[in-house]
Image (cartoon, rainbow, N blue to C red; front, side, top):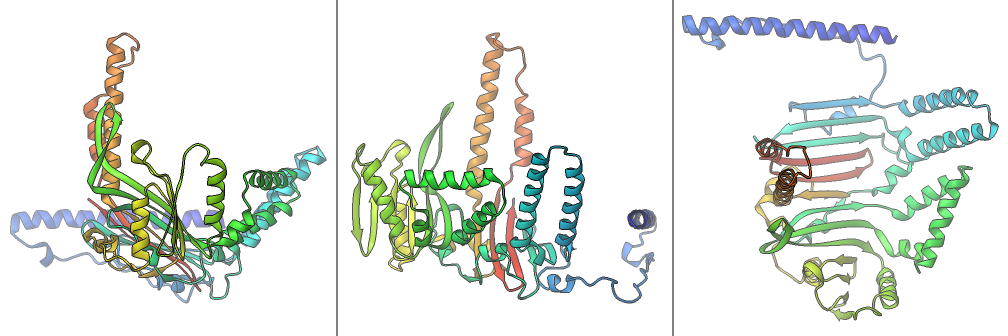
Length: 455
């Protein structure tokens, strides 16, 4: 059967190549005729290639139609892969591989370790939900000359979502309120629905049922280290509400100096992490740890305003960093500066009319055909990539100068890289890129939408 597939594919490729050659030949003669006889290409006779229709339907059912309804045809990329029964075949392959491997191991103890490892792999596949996956699809559609709309689908039949992977990343799409509270100068950000409690419990169950002592020891050591650090993992997990994110901002008015050779100015950065919370249990735990381990070295400032609790370092540290923790009614933030946390809190509470990321021209351009509800999202501004590229270029420039100095001093005989070649390569590959994407967890699987702009 495999050889038949190979010959079939080879025949298709050969036929396609001949057709392309015929097309090129016709095109060349048309062009010559157009140049000599002033006959337009549109009026010249065209070779017609007819493709015979397949008789009957496919011999094997697939989920092509179900996946295709979520994709965009007519673009520059389209892909579908049927995965029905793929995991069943994988498990059968694992069993055959296990039998073959065990036969080659004379030591019964070592052979049992192999069996335990294979049992763990089977248990992961069977509980993950991979066996429920029945189709994968992807498409890419150019909306403008430099903006491409892409989709990616992991499909399962409605109701076939009992595996952990389908439950870890959210249950149903919801409003993107976390995206709405991003500051205007955000350059890189993302958010994910994640049932961390479910994930950790799943991994614990896999480890405890694996009959692999080393895994059980890892779990026990993790619990021991957590207790020594004063962390109650169950308490922390029960305080969070299944959502985690981050954001990086570049100031539009202020800069900082970066010591890369000569001083280099880049936009002043700030950042924060955040999580949805059910209560202030996690904030209280952080506050208690700060009292035990930080306040002996430096004082901390605590503030309560409009129902929000703030814990922060009173004075900026190196590079203007002033760590702070903020607790609101729905979120816990850990950030580089109190100001950025207060700004986000004011927006999320509806107490501020300041412009947000959604109000920027770049975001509006990227948000076309992107859904307004989802379970995960990500955003990258061109300002982020441009700044990183400038830093990379300066680092490469400094390395070249150091190599030249070493060569002149006789410390090395290796010539420095050609600076023009490096500059040409950087110019070729460093493009301004911005992107926005949203991922939805639906009753038919996971659907990802994204727009990418490359200039």
